[in-house]
Image (cartoon, rainbow, N blue to C red; front, side, top):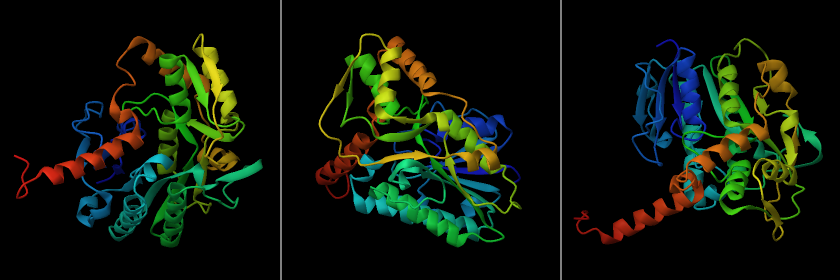
Length: 342
């Protein structure tokens, strides 16, 4: 059906704001997700053009994509700590599942395919700003698998299958399925709740950042990109003014949250250090960020200060939540008798 978009990973941090944006722009949306963070998702759009479908990208079949015009892949175990819980599971979902979804989409005749990659594929760029042609040096399994999926998508690319790859900067900001395991978000939570901000290492490591709502806007622009344009399909998503080191992020948080102490802890084990160039997305997609680090800190601090329950839900901490799910599954299996718990 025309204007029907399947969003894989629709129930996540980026997925819910994206679904709202797509609905607001007149699209029909199929929200495809494993929903590891629970059902029902009350924050999802309430619209006759919105449909939820529970499933796993590793096992998706072409019939699910019948009448779908485009696919947006946000699915997978997100971020480096979550990916380290089980390398086998991460490979199965983040690489094999992503490749299976892309191949299935191509077989189903889907032309526009958007893949949510990560700026972490660069690893280290030194003092220069990395553009999409810069050699990548992924520093983690999560980033390595993202890069491998990109390569598979470029292999599949032809005149009938048009993938667009978005290398997102580190995402921040308030969203319905909130995450407090991302740099800006967790520092703001620490400042409000604990009255200090802990920085691992010297804090000089560079990172690019992008607000979650701006990520959704970038996806919308990629969705509308003219398929006839002969342009490189990989885009860094962020903004030059959003390249920061960790110390400068902490300073912004401390300015917005009163009476906060900044503490430097032991040397960081995170070796990522990179700045990005965003001219390709600006010139080709027409994308520029609309929200600053300070905007994100203010909105998060406000909700934390006005709602004592905010930031206490276990689903706000992605890696720990996945760890708990795996542990619960093991315990339930041990307690079962003849396949039943009771």
